[in-house]
Amino acid sequence: MLELRGITAGYDRRAPVVRDVSLTLAAGESVGLLGPSGCGKSTLARVAALLHRPDAGTVVVDGTEARGWRHRAPRAQRTAFGVVFQQPRLSADPRLRLRDLIAEPLRATGAPDGIGELATAVGLSDDLLARRPHQVSDGQLQRACLARALALRPRWLVCDEMTAMLDASTTAALVSVVEDYRRENGAGLLAVGHDPVLLGRWCDRVVRWTDLAPGSGPTGGGQAGRGM
Amino acid sequence: MTPLLDVRGLTVRFRMPGGREVAAVTDVSFELREGECLALIGESGCGKSVLASALLGLLPGNAVASGRALLGGGLDLTAADERVLARTVRGRRVGLVPQSPSAHLTPVRTVRSHLRETLRELTGRRGGEEAAAARASFPADHLDRYPHQLSGGLAQRAATALALVGDAPLLLADEPTTGLDRELVERTADELRRHVDAGHALLMITHDLAAAERIADRVAVMYAGRIVELADAARFFGSPGPRHPYARGLLDALPERSFTPIPGMPPELDALPPGCAFAARCPSATDACAAVPAFDGTVACHHAPEASRA
Ligand code: SF4
Image 1 (spheres, rainbow over the protein chains, first blue to last red):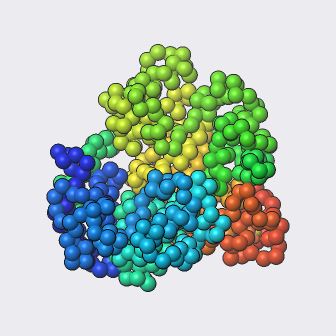
Image 2: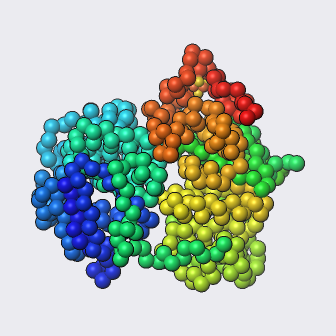
Image 3: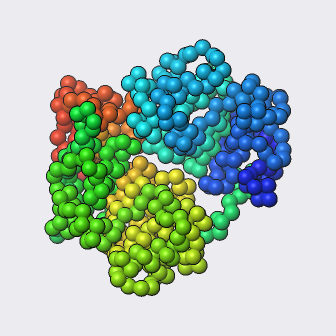
């Protein structure tokens, strides 16, 4: 079970983008978190994946309360999560060949090198694995980032707008990789996005940010409905 | 009536180090009329952005273009020299609605200052910023804001206002809805449609099928550098649906349809297979597909169903 209790978080303590939000995911459950961009849902996702320390509140991962964040999180907790972000180019080291990019987490933990299966699962050929990020398309790079997220066999996946930049077919392909993995491993999923049709089709249930966090929310959203 | 934009046999090749050649755009032909929106759809790397660059005269130095792209029956955009393009075409005859507008705006200048300079440059007039902003529904009380103070939707409107200043008859929108929320996608699409209804011709390059469905009169599907289908939008998204197997696969991949991906990935543009570039992924492929299927003006496939009259 993944429990977020009373989370307040942001980048400026005086103006948190997430205020007192709670959300619980059952083991193996997939939850879509739906909201407009800039509303704070990505920050909550980063807190859930132990990548961002909240100002208040607790995160409980499979019964154990999180006490450290980012590299300070205990290894067993950190590696319980696989995370994929919206923009693969911002989260991929441009110097690494895709093969090494996928193997990055394996190297850090000294786990046996087994990227062949991962590469096959996300549909990357040997030719593509030998290339660097600037030599592949966004969709191909995102496939590599997803394989990297799965490398340590996480129990939880956090996908933050994973397909927002991608075409329909690549979107369906990446979602089916995630779902195959979850079926085989019983992993849970928090999928953050702004497309109700996609999240509704993908996830067991969809939570709207406005219902979850009536007190949080976008600043500067007051222009909606202006003009014609 | 002469079409506003008449593209015939447009081909773009990139010469790469080591003698490699990238076939970015191959033998593309289409027409665009005033008051019409054509959506050019396809996945990233299919050549659609290169096509846009060719139409704006913004191809890099290692590109070789052939074929024609006649604007208003006269000027060939692929052959015009940079001075002509900069002085008389970009902004004046072709307006660009850019991808990621906030990156397109200069961060240290307000929206008013952007509009003022563009107005002076394109019309020689002073003032008129409010009116120019209003054309794209940009609120006058936000004119003195800087780009980072704008929401994604307002940045998009600011960029659209700039694209409209020169009253260019042809608008070219490059992925105008990427990264926007569904609601904002719809609003942006509707606003672009308003400019089409006011008489502009709009070429919208996008991978967002929902946006294309909302706004386009016709749809051109690009795969591996070629247009493989050109169809009426209502028939394409509705009944009888697309005729090309790739286009059918793309629509079927949508979460509101069967959510099934097309197997495999597109070929690399520097290593295109002989024959139909879609053959390796195509459920209908036969031996005949070893030859490149000709584009007959509506579809390029050896086994496309007949166009029904439904
Ligand atoms: S030409 Fe053949 S391989 Fe190409 S799309 Fe048509 S049926 Fe498929």
